[in-house]
Amino acid sequence: MRKFNLILYVIPILLLVFAIPLHAEEIGKDVKVTYLGHAAFKIVSPKGVVIYIDPFLSGNPKTPPEMKTVEKADLILVTHGHGDHVGDTLAIAEKTNAKIVVIPELGRYLTQKGAKNVVNMNKGGTYIFQGIAMTMVNALHSSSVTEGNQIIYTGDPAAFIVRFENGFTLYHAGDTAVFGDMKIFGEIYKPELSLLPIGSHFTMDPGEATYAAKLLGSKYVIPMHYGTFPALTGTPEEFLRLMKDIPQIKVLVLKPGETVQ
Image: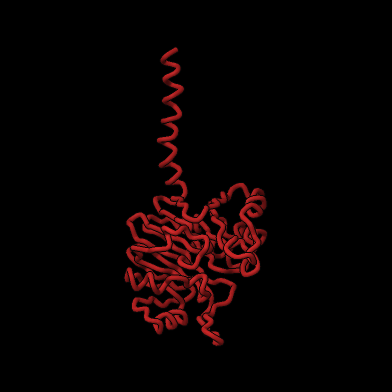
């Protein structure tokens, strides 16, 4: 009886021990993805390269206070010129000397504002940094900066497909509507994780994001760009409900500050 009781205690512990690395390996192969609220993410590669995407932090009501300050960044990827995506790019780059990867028109604007380490690229192009390949792809949105009464054009909106040193690939859609080329992204780049806006009004809603997930065919999807402002009415609950019809794709709903790997 004692031996039987011991087995009952030991088996759950063994399952927990072995489940943790399998779960981590299954999702991101040691790529750490932290959601910072809205469309902002911090990503740490297997070799420790720190990437911020659309780092809207200091003014973001959803970003945890302890994550609004950035001590280390190697790369900042900005999808377009709107303030809730450019966010703290200039301040982070000045503090950390991170490279800012953007479309040329936005790059020129940031350079005029004092950025010293801008990597200009364009759609279809790939920039490689320490074994990480970043491909800029299309997004359907707008892109500008407003200063007083002046609207400054900052190039086309874009999205990024990032392939890490170990082969794990993710797609950050930026702000976008659904469009047919997402199927091409899935076929060419095969992203295992897609970060998709669901908030509606300015981007896809949960229904359109569900269709986008079908086109992309990623194993995992993280919803983003929802709940930050009243206009963003799409919810992860609605997205989860709709995605139940696609059981082969797992939806990972992260609270701001949570990490998966």
